Image (cartoon, rainbow, N blue to C red; front, side):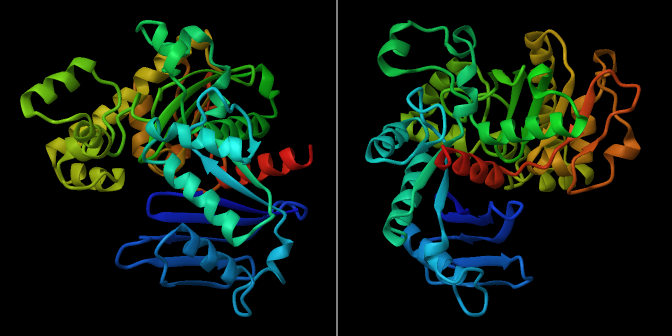
Length: 401
C-alpha cells in the first residue's frame, strides 16, 4: 500500500510518501514552506538519492499538493509511474474534541468536526482542513484519513481532564483538557517498550516531547493518564513562543493594564511569550537560546532554567500520578538533540531513580538509545519521534479494517 502523509501548516506543507508493503520504505519526502509569501521554496528527496531545494510558484495548499504530486511522478525525481498508485492519504490533524478519538475517514461529517474545532486550535485546524481539501481536489477518489493529536489522550480519566469551573461549561461547550502531540507520545512510548523488550501494557512511562511546542505525558498500561497540554496547546510547559501554565488572573491584569482585546491576548500568549519573550534575543529556537546563554546572556540563562524546571516539575508530578516510573523518554527537536537540556531536566533526580550517564548522554545519534546508567532504577531513553510513520501506520490499519 502506498500512503502519502500530509502535514499542512499555516505557511507550509510537509509530506512523506511510504510504501507500507515494502518494509514501510520512505519513497520520497520534503517540505514546501513560505507558502503565499515571498521566497516560497521546496525541499525534496527520494530513496534513489535524488534531491533538490529550489524556489517554487505556490500560493496556497492546492498549489502545494499539485507541486508535490508533480514531482512524485516527474521523469527526473519521480518515484511513481502514476498518481493512481497512491492508495491513501493520511493527514495530521490537531484537534477533534471528544467527537473523534481514533483515526477516521475524512467524510463530510468528519471534516465538519475539524471545522468546529477552529476556535480551539486556530493555529492548526484551519490549515489542516485546507490540506485535506487540497488533496481532495488534486487526488479525487483517493481515501483521506485523519489522525488526530488529541486521540491518544482520550483515555484520560474525568478527574484529570476536567477544569475547576462550573460543570455546565463542559456539558454545553466541551471545555476540558484534551492534550496534543498524541501521535508522537504514542509512537515513542511504544518504541521504548519494544527497545527494552518489555510489554507495552505493563509499563509506567513518561514521555517528554520537547521542541518549539512541548508537552509531557504520563502513560500507564498503554493508556494516557494525564498530559500537560489542555483545551488548547497553550497549557503546560513553557515553549518556544507559548507561555504555558500561568495564573488566569495574569491575563485579566494585562488586559486591564493595556486594553488588549481577547484576540490580541491570544497573540501575546501564543506567539510572543515562552523562551522568545523571556530570552529577549528575537528567537524562540532553543539552540539560539543555549548559544546566547553560553556567551553570558542572563535572560537566556533564566529562560533555559525555566524551561528545564517546568519539565522537571511535570516529571515529578507524573511519577506521583503513575505511583512510580519504569521508563522516561525524551523526544522531538530539543529532546533528541540537546544533551545539555536533558542533563538540566534530570539534575537532582537521582533519588527518584533517574541517573544520567554523561558518556551516553553527550553523543548525538539518530537511533533510539539509553542515556541512564545501568544501575539506575528508571530507564531513561532518547527516542527519535516519527509522526509521519505513525500516521501512515494508522492510516493503513484503518483502511485494512
